[in-house]
Length: 602
Image 1 (cartoon, one colour):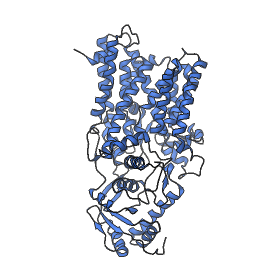
Image 2 (spheres, rainbow, N blue to C red):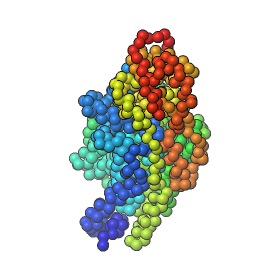
Image 3 (tube, helix red, strand yellow):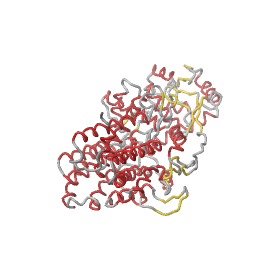
Image 4 (cartoon, rainbow, N blue to C red):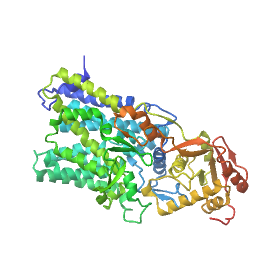
């Protein structure tokens, strides 16, 4: 009887004599199948959760909007990089917005016969599956160990970092980073058109899914070209470098073409609000760990917890496997330091020590990375490779029976420690009655509008149903123009005036902008409740705090609640100026602004 585990652990060397073709072919089937099953089970109910949201974060809602908008642009034959549907009537450029076309195009296609929420979940499930498989391929190439590579794939695909970014498809697309590293290694060693094409296609995939990762891959490629000799000495330096330059030239030209909408605006006026040094520090890692929850409720998840305690024990037990792995140790160190941001913080306390990120932040393109903490993904990549190498050292000269037993124990411990599921789901943030707003085509504003990302992202989400222009909308801060930022501040000010009982200034402003309808939703926003993980440093394995950590990340900074009483003053003020609502549902009141003469006021 076929035993897939035996095929996987049958050989810990690259020797074809002791590794028969049938075993290699069987293992080639076992690995992707195992990661597919793990992706379904560990992230349940992603595979089947119709009619619910997997997050209540603004980032999740804007990712759903991305799927809808890219689909609209494809069907209408217009550029996805600008739209008048947001920030009406001036519109907004989306060249710097994280559209992630590599995700949004297939998501838009799936959304034609599934809901956008289900399309998002299926894409995310595919990313979990492929990221594990890709990491396995890289770790297998470097370490020569199948079982070590399988463990590395689990650590990569289901890491706390990956689950931290469930709401963002561009950051969750982790499969192409290990593939870029894999083809760079093969290109330097063997050359050839196939490996060069592999580099180019994987780099292009990064450009189409996450330009953050495209920049990370560029930094990795530069490190590999300069310091690969620390580990890969079979190929002469000059020959290997020329091979890398050949592949790099093709990848660079294709990246330039894909990223041109973004790069073409880099020399223009600043597209959004300036980011202060304090903002960068807030988005940086701590010397002790990853900052899971941003200020003011800073929670630090320690590095052993993020990287997996079980993996740390493997590295300690097989530390001799680090010998000769100077390049990967260098990569881990470089990206660890970059992830600490411009100033060193220890335990949430700022030390004032300046770090290298403060120097590179002035470099074009690198200055748009904004969140130094995401450099942790490249540190994680180097880490899983080193884990696989140390695992092979641990398994050296052991019998097949012992290897099989230790492999089973290690996989069990890793799964128990880091598996994210079952994931929390949320009631859909779109009331069914919002579909009735499609009866008209005029521009519409959604209120309340005084909580920044919270209401703006919901306005994006509701637009995917009614498809009408809105004078608001949440986009990546890099894409927010000074004019759009100013208009948002004006709307925010008028909303606060409306809350105090004066509707005329808001109505006049909306009429000037051609907005014909107001939707006053029966809901308000408040800061989420504190949890036991707030302002903590988590040292225990991830499993012990997983539920609360994933909850605060998935639920976002705001809680939405039904609020008839709190909005009574605003509704009465609108009725005094505009008359009774044209439509009233359990979720909102619809007021028609009309096109009457402009009144005085802001």
